[in-house]
Length: 100
Image 1 (cartoon, helix red, strand yellow):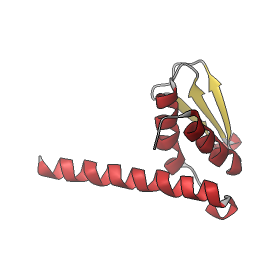
Image 2: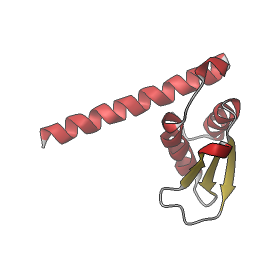
Image 3: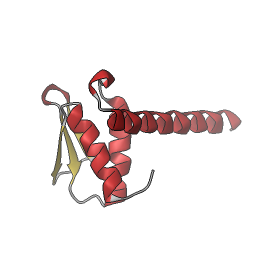
C-alpha cells in the first residue's frame, strides 16, 4: 500500500462506512491511537505523519468489529487488502519466532 493522501482517504472512508468517526487529537497515546468502542470513535495522535497515520489505521482496522456486508465494493477491496497484509505480517512473525 502506498503512503499517499489517497490511501489515507480510502482508509478513512472505510472507517466512515463502518460508522466509526476518525479524530486527530493531541494526547499521550502509547501506540498513536485510542479506540472508543462504545462510541465508535478512533482517535489518532495528530502529530503522526502520513505514513504513521496509514500504518496506525492498518493496525486498527483488523481489531474492529466489522460488518463487511455494509461496505461498498471499493471499501471492501481496501478492507480485504488490509486483512491480507495483517495475515501476511502475522505469518512472517510466526515463522521468524519459530526459526529462533
